[in-house]
Length: 511
Image 1 (cartoon, rainbow, N blue to C red):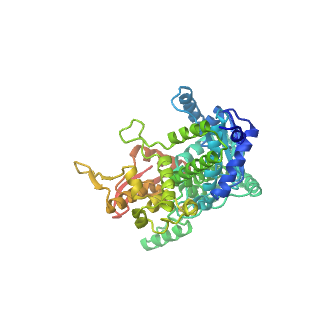
Image 2: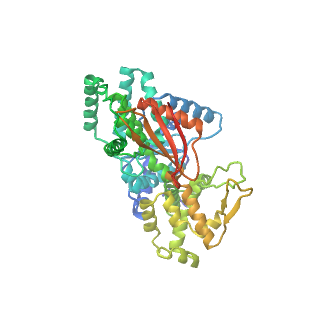
Image 3: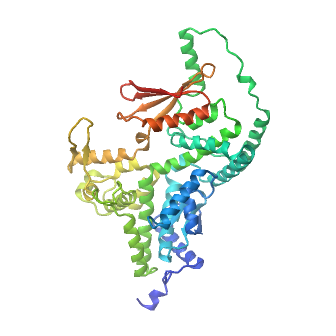
């Protein structure tokens, strides 16, 4: 390599400093914005140690987090495996916030700092800002200030009410986090700092003036007739907006025993659960987007003679390890690697737009040969989640590359059946089945609050809509119901109803 070319390099060794990081960042930003047309939040890069990364692991990756014993337990577990060499640490961690915060490991080489900056600060950042799920269901502008409020508020609750009392509520709330999200309607926006301060003052006022007397007045001994009881049930369901899918939200608003500070703890856990909900629905797309962005950027940098052959070989070695898909009989196999599938689909879209086959033209007539791969990818990143993205863009060529086929396993059958192979009908069946496996809503238990007689026995009635005959594991089910009862204060019943036939499959209660 000549001297003139060497002088253009962003870095010459594995060592880094902040000046080198800044120079690399500017070069990455130019390609991300001008070539790929990405739209990102302002970036904030921070350097952290291995112990700080372990701490971030234990507190679900948030830069500000309240204290809880489960986080300490997770930290000890992660640290033990890291020290023993059972697994390494992530090269970076990125926060869906405005500004977008990217944590870089201090032990990374300069080549890896370049790679992960492109991956997180521009790939993930663009996806966070533009994908419709994140735009509709999370608030990047307010999450950091809200977490600061939550941490201080919980610490103050521990001082006032004791650590055990606070942890008891948080334990029950954590057990219900998967059932503490809005799936079919938009959650309320997070409040500003001023509004949070007003909430704090209001809660303190309610704690000082709250009286339990008003809900202990005796009811009339007269029993309403069946028609009157049915009318009352209909009215209370309307007033309480039942059925309600967000169990934490219902308990926060309607529990008869929770004090104001306990309701606020439920709200904090509910906000965190909602914050992570879109990420669970876009794992393939999010990681695929970031991987495709970093792969494109580092190759552009190499073409511009800004990184050396040794640097790009180091980056490509890391990249190939990330997108490696083990075979089904490989000891490392644990299902479909979201990095591998996502990156392959992004590259396949670029190929279809630039160099389509006749098969591509038949399957994707709107984009095949258009040459507009940047526009197509940005549109896909903005308007899809994993399920719809796979259903829309998984090509027969990629199905063959991954050697995918469909097996059906009937409970009463002696053998598995190969239900779809590599023909036109088979490709569609494989694509639909793979897409369905990424549908978070379909793969999680659908449990809803359906009724509660606040003036009668006050028993909370839940319904589990059973899909595909899959029941809840009894031990976990009963333990979770006890957490619901702890927050509700009265007995809780759960009925399992077959979603197709409406037949009641099981009933249980804390009574």
